[in-house]
Length: 212
Image 1 (cartoon, rainbow, N blue to C red):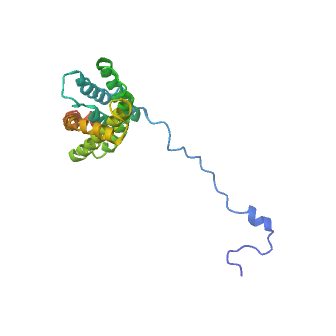
Image 2 (image 1 turned 120 degrees about the horizontal axis):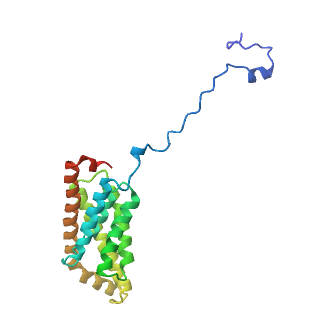
Image 3 (image 1 turned 90 degrees about the vertical axis):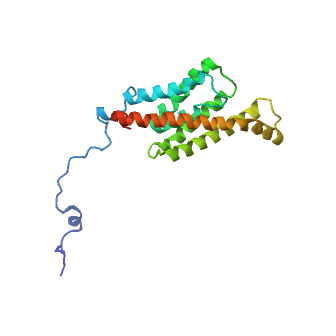
């Protein structure tokens, strides 16, 4: 009356030890192994060198006479974050290029804030890696310019000693800085068009550059 055919009189240990033997399969190798040589990231690849060259050229344009606050800082940071596959290069290249230009232009007390803003904007630019249409780039540019304007002017208000540390002093600081914000936006628009647009044209002509 036992459906599975087990003998009623079999010892209890038999059911624990008996059963079909299963051949042991060779252990599978983990799919996460070392990447093939051709898939590894090469920091000296033509794509990387072209990106570094474009960023350096834009940053060094700071040495040419230009209107106040007409700067490549925001566009360069966004572009680095969007186009460098290596996050370390996305942070280091724009900061290193800025540091080289600052050696000529001179360092000031607000440099740590400026470089920190560049790092944050480069991280923010990662959002343009997969979706980088013109309107999205423009929105990221406006957001970055606004962030940079607020952060750097807060630093001026807090540390320069030019304004009293009161709400009135804060309002005066931003009111006097506001006329320069339009130049800042113009710089973002100009350099974003130059970098993102120029890169798109280059990638069409040289398909190897388009690889991530």
